[in-house]
Length: 103
Image 1 (tube, rainbow, N blue to C red):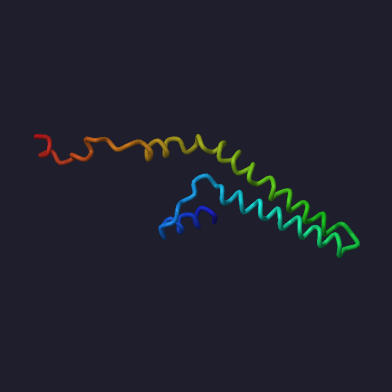
Image 2 (image 1 turned 180 degrees about the vertical axis):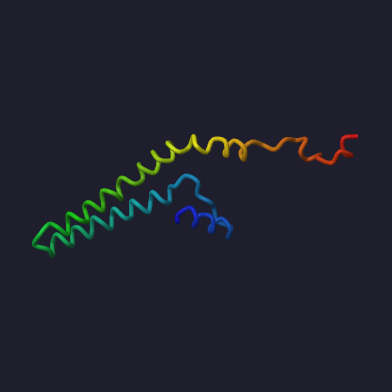
């Protein structure tokens, strides 16, 4: 969903974010919200089960940015042929594909 949103941002003239920094910021904000919710639940509840649920949820939010980077590093080589094909500069001769332009 995040990358799709980046696509639409770029289509409307915005800057396409390639380093996932915005996604990392979202997860930092989720951590802040989780901490505040846990504090409120701790004050309002006599048991720890609700607080523990938020803490477990927060562990996922804190781990996800690292997991994203690791996963991208892992799957990166699988995309090497595609990346190589589309990231190499076009052949200068390709501009002159009309045989008559060679004479």
